[in-house]
Image 1 (cartoon, one colour):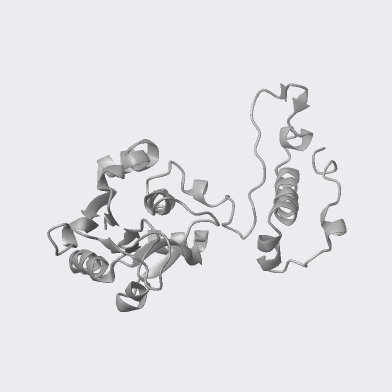
Image 2 (cartoon, one colour):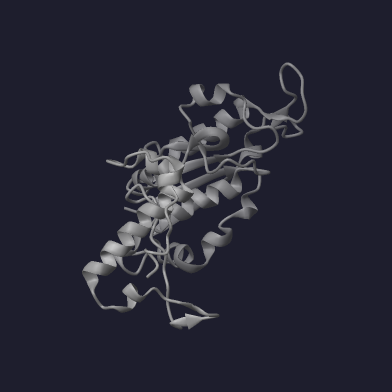
Length: 248
């Protein structure tokens, strides 16, 4: 089954962009996944091809019209009825690695990219569109978020990464941040690779990595730590224990 992606956008020339190089690009060339872009403006019905209008109730900016958006979505759904439709919006649910894995395991997806002040709210209920947020930031448009979603999915497709295990021991896969990595040279600007990683003792290495993963998650992402299964929420003083023992 080929993973088929459709992007509904006012700027189709932004694709494939970075998805046309490296792992995603090679997979696209090999036919592992397919990308189609749809110009939203093609579904406007007036002679000016209008896709937006002023906000109801007043305010700055312009809002994408629901009738135009619905026509574009209907077009994409007719071609791929089983693909979920995602809309890139800061009002959406945060994207998670678990959701990415679900999407990557499916037939593909359709991504709706917003511009201006965003979407008419009625489109989400009217066309069963999933609102997705890729971070607590506001972008000039949904295209960059769409590239992020697609890249996260494509790298998980069978055969895209060289080793299947490459996608397992990573940040968020176990609910924690990944442990830090090192490589040669052993010493660089007076800083050395932790001795345990040079010991050849795989049990000690695994224990060190687990401890660092937990420690870094507590310090850097307490929200993840609180959600981690079996984790006990610690006071800041307990969480901020010295890391030098782990760096030996």
